View 1: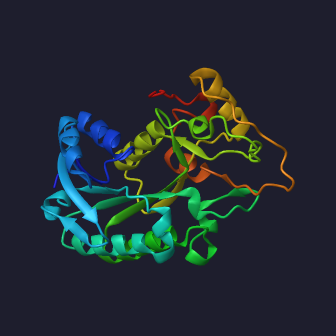
View 2: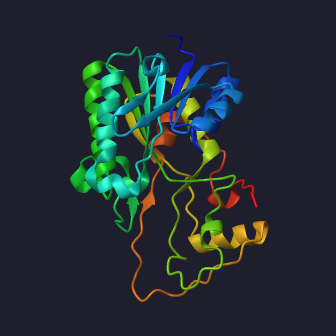
Length: 281
């Protein structure tokens, strides 16, 4: 299979523009969705569409064709409601049974900075490597399951622990417009713009940066109050009301230092205060 081929498991808010980006680069792009009415949208963006569900068994037609690719991006964030019973781990486990029969050379797994507990300081990748250390044990179990499988199967794996995905119609203040009594206004954010995630994935593939785990967050961490104020001023949302908390609010500052040093990557948006948004209503 050509190096210029990529399959994206989960063509949603991130996966669809990711697939379009690689298609425009000349890659053979395949992508999955759980929704029948989205197949035409994928096709319109030059993505070969596949209907696929992980229930947690792999349910879909032509799964072998979807996995006939050089690089697989696994972009299926687990539902919070299902994390306690490790459904996502079962999803990954069942998916690996199919990957085992495939020609895949590389896997990129989209994880999350939710794996880190709030330690009230800067946090780095090697501080959370087991479910017991994690604020999201399910994600760590999935990461470690993939690591074990890929090491045994000689498949390259890079894990991206992405911060809060923002940009375009995902606008922080939109979700808190007009709220009263918010106590987290002085907490620093760990955001990443969608465009930077796409360019990060391109950088990994173009430069063969494999078998690593990286925090993917903007290197500047303004406080939420600043973010919301700018969103409201520029996009017309109602400013939420912040109050002084009775107790010190726990926090975490996720460091992207390892990624920046390993890749020499230049962020499109270093500062979340500069993110590009587009209000959709």
